[in-house]
Image (tube, helix red, strand yellow):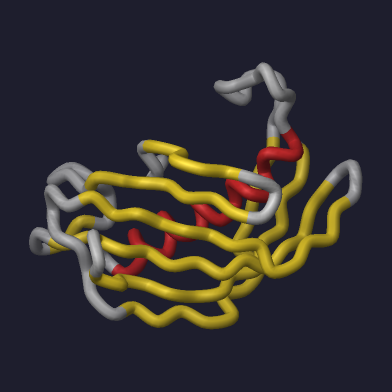
Amino acid sequence: MLFVHHLMDISEEKAMTSFTISEDTLFVEKGSFSEVGLIENAAQSCSAIIGQDFFDDDDYQGERNKVIGYISAIKKIEIHALPKVGQEITTRAQLVNRMQTEAFAVSTVNCTVHHRETLLLEGTLNFIIHEV
């Protein structure tokens, strides 16, 4: 399931996404998006930075490429608050380092998740992304 609705900005070193939480969103509990949901949103947003190298420029739907990504480590996560159903969250990811070959990429990415001015999550995650 995707936890990103809009890719607002992307480059080789950063990405910014948005996601609106609905009642039927996976990981909604008692009217709030859970900790697991926030981490998955952060992971999907972070992986956009590295994953873009595995797609052709004109393949917007990813139909010609098959890649899979894993969180290899959560180095640090601090969850300050949980967003409510109906709220839009904005996630910003910043590449710390990357090692890439033709077949896979390993990276460390810092991220923050906000609802308006409220910081919901901040953390650092490691990823492995490879072709299947």
